[in-house]
Image (tube, rainbow, N blue to C red; front, side):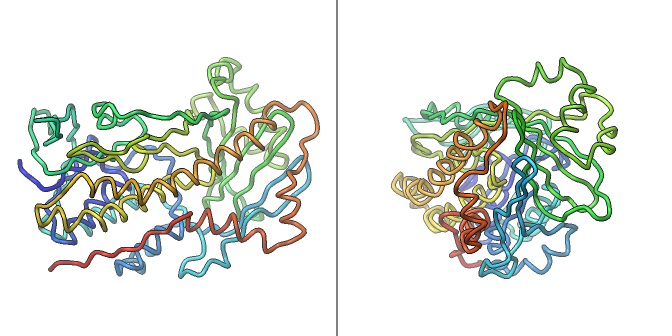
Length: 402
């Protein structure tokens, strides 16, 4: 197979970039190693920045017909004190809220619209196994497609294959590890009438839990010290339920829904970033270029923004067979600042709030910045804007070729 662009990974970045390149008249194939998108995704937050992209593509009204739950306010509990942290309702966009939507619905939607363009091809059960290099340049991908070994030659290979990226590994690009003091164990409990409809972070001595309202259930993140998951699991579900009861006053009766320790799913948190995102013939974006902490739930949306920027910069050079290394460098130059700034903000929260909370044995104090947000409500618009729109929102600049 010969294409202009081969995208490895059918997640938010990969499908969005494939869609936008095909829409602009390009010839692109997306390799997705699974048979479908029905997997246990964590990234179910669709932020206003992503919905603005959908609006620019003329797809927002149809997108919002998919089942979703709206979240616009974020609160925190430090001990028993409740504080307000962010309010997205003031954002100057059509959708000033976060849409909680299963990621497979989001991906199915993008793929369905991408398939309307003749230059788009999605290949499932297609796992990249190696990059093909000639003369110091990546010229394609070797893959196992439906059990058969295949070669795909391409002017550009794009790694959208996540934090354990094969593309990233095979390029030999250097990775900076910024670190994280915690891991997360996810679980769910039922949502009942009268529960608050918001995102809540509960900070207590030696513990932290984040509760996300999903409409008919709470998606909960039990934050634990880095590397302590085996110890938590070894303690058994009774001990976990007892600890969660301390962190979740008012929800104790529902914790019986956690029947075994396997009802908690581990997410190993990492904050990493490539020093250089590209080499001749290959580019990494999304988590393959910069793994985000779950703080703010922005990973999916940063990946989509990467895809929009990359498509804006690369669609014409690919279509016109004039792709240069400088075009790939331009993508990194465009997206490096928002990636670095977002990660810097996440690391500041990790080191300044989360790590001290996990290490605390006494009363947890409300951070000064959060106190100021209570005194001056306008300050709550800043985290709302950074969470909802990011440091550099991207806009679709390519035109649809019919």
